[in-house]
Image (cartoon, rainbow, N blue to C red; front, side, top):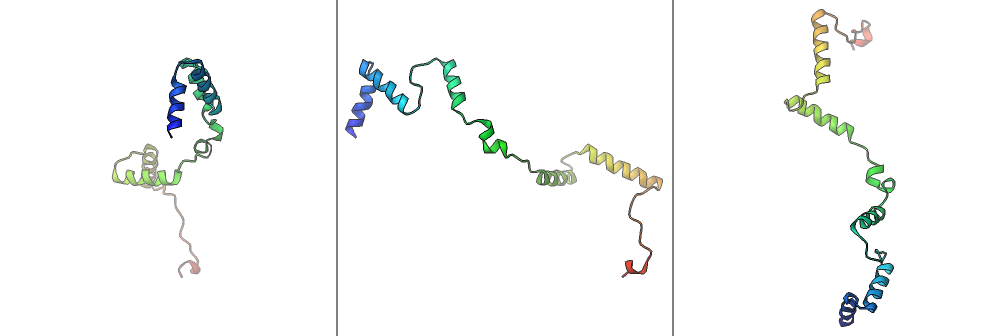
Length: 115
């Protein structure tokens, strides 16, 4: 353990040996070998990230339509969510009923429907 501490202190020294060892260490561990400015580091970080087409969270994203719809209908019944399209459809149904033009299933007239 003491040897590692000595090595880390040697690398941080601004001597020629320290610079070369730091460069070699960075090359081995896939870090930026030479000192670079912040603009270049931004590019390095951008290329180091995983591509979006390989990111499972983005590629296989599928919103939960059924659960969201049920939640919104429950909130609508409580009066916490306003669905204008559903309100419009209900109003049209109500007006049709007032005019006597209700759409619906006609009752069956044969005997099998009663049993």
